[in-house]
Length: 263
Ligand SMILES: Cc1cc2nc3c(=O)[nH]c(=O)nc-3n(C[C@H](O)[C@H](O)[C@H](O)COP(=O)(O)O)c2cc1C
Image (cartoon, helix red, strand yellow):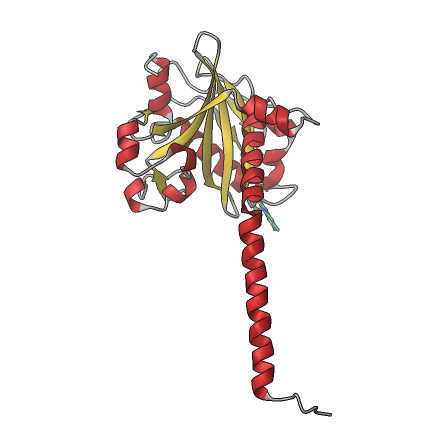
């Protein structure tokens, strides 16, 4: 049965008004929730840094997590040059370190370079500047160095954090916070048992070459970490990215620079 109010024009008007109201509501919600989303993202990042450094304990409050994270200093590293970025070059590149996004920068040609032909970690492009976190002791000496790493797993990019002790040789821990690997297979990178193999490993040989590797099956030799059973491809990805980021194409030159006391 049709009423006298029925007409195509009225139907379209109601649909249009409804669309407008909904889009305004969605926009207001998106803008209103943005600060909360940003705060949660920051909390998540802080937790990941602390987890990799072995400082995250169950039941810690937001305030405790923030207090522990505040002990770390955020710095940008000029990766190809192997040193801290200077204020001048960051200014020239239009980078504000507090808002710098490594992942976004790796997609901007002016802020990154192609690794085609030499890309063991499978990342395609590498940002020129990388965010690292340092914790210093009372004398100002670095006692923890937090290095973000990423590379290809089986199903997509894996993002993790590798932490070195203050000697800049001993591994404090490795933690993955984002990946697409399969639960029970490649996702075992998150298991405490597997992660427990990392602390105490010596990352570099005396000649500066990378000394750690993730091997298929059970580790036998020095610097070897057990592979993930049933996940050979993820194992290879993790081995490649850890060795790449510690090596000459990654943080190797920067770490050598710090080891030489130039940081
Ligand atoms: C549904 C499914 C999910 C898989 N997920 C992973 C994975 O996350 N990581 C991985 O290395 N292999 C994964 N594999 C297995 C690989 O395809 C491959 O068989 C495996 O890496 C070989 O490892 P192995 O030599 O230790 O058996 C998956 C296989 C299937 C069928």
